[in-house]
Image (cartoon, rainbow over all chains, first blue to last red; front, side, top):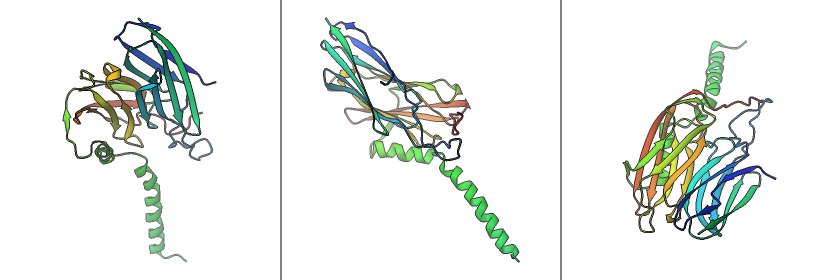
Length: 106
Length: 151
């Protein structure tokens, strides 16, 4: 349902450090801006981004409203074993998005 | 008939009211120092080991690319536990906190942030041995991140 772009290699050598890039479509409304009616637009941001490798957490990021709209995150991971990389975004107003990509190590 | 004092008091009050929201709409260097203190606690911050990459001149404050890299072997014994980024003049001093570990291989993260004004950005890395390393960068923003709805 949500639009997510993930850039991660499909294959890697054991022990290789791979870059994982993720972009998600989200307004990241700060809660500090007045709208056209003069009232403050309620805050609507992604608060947390977590990445797992075969279920084990490898990276986590807590975001503030200062993260730009359509949050982009790039980080690195050591390719240990084949499996799935899980990416999860949670935020205000019950926002939840989850994506998985497969990676073959060998 | 109103006395001149009443009018003066009213004007003073009105002037104060109009100033108050502006004063609270921006974080200050002190607020940033407070936010950093909340993360670092009693630890001491040393300059170095951290590289903060962001353009010195930003045309659009709504989308500012930022990369933080920390020199670290990223082994279970010696790795970067967390990277925190703070700003001086956005409405809130905190930008993001990332948690890392030996599974990351290298302590490099990139993202895109919003900047409401020309200001100083500070990145702080926390190592597994409890040390804090920092880097800062001054950024000039020509078009600030919008504080009003443009749609």
